[in-house]
Length: 209
Image (cartoon, rainbow, N blue to C red):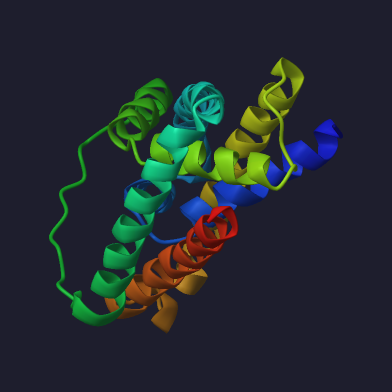
């Protein structure tokens, strides 16, 4: 299988997962504004190191699940319900609530690197997200679980995460005043993404019935 294609699959999937404003990308942007772009980049590198580990774990988990289709069937139905609930919540229930955030006083570039690793470790969402997406890609025949394919996919996921964090770092000044960064529109973005994932999941379930 073409490892370049797999690399860009990983890059795109990671981009999709990091687009909504969240803890990691907003922290990277704030660090850039407060301490300079270089420290924002160092923070992002720390994030991407953990993303590589998380994506590798997710791929191993997905390979195990691919050998147990009965488990995948159950997880797909559970995932469908969860994604639908998340979509409904963010599109129709969630309301804008300003949050007061306290930024820790961190000056060293190395501290920013380890801060990125720490926050990325706390954010465990990429593991189930990447596990589900790799299973879905494998079901379409776009990804296999050979070692070279997994390495290419992991590298793509880390690159995609870094690209999106980089965009937040360098364009935050321009986008922070736009309506896209309001809490209401953040909810719509997240709800839209989970809605698309819900539709893909439902299609996969119907295909296997």
